[in-house]
Image 1 (cartoon, rainbow, N blue to C red):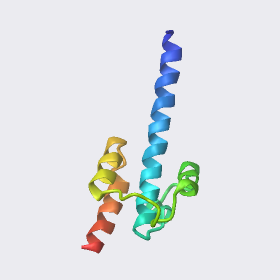
Image 2 (image 1 turned 90 degrees about the vertical axis):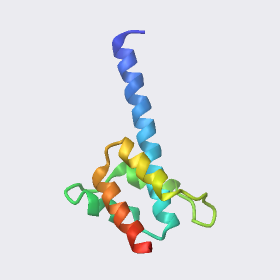
Image 3 (image 1 turned 180 degrees about the vertical axis):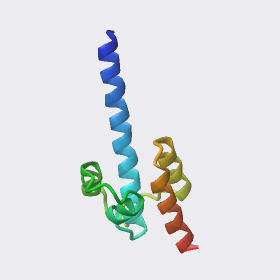
Length: 98
């Protein structure tokens, strides 16, 4: 496989994984009656809307139909992608519940 093709496959794989991370975040928010866009803007106030987040929100299901997403699972996924600011905001919301 040529290096350019390999590079493109790696990028596509990463983008697919990133979309899954965003969906996990959005569903976790729905499961806890939180607005994913509001949390995202708290973490990244200088960014305007996020098309990938909007797409993920459309794919979420009502919390009654969703499986549980453990807090630590979400935090782990966010850290894998270096979303430390978002993980901080999520941690704040977790602390509010306790």
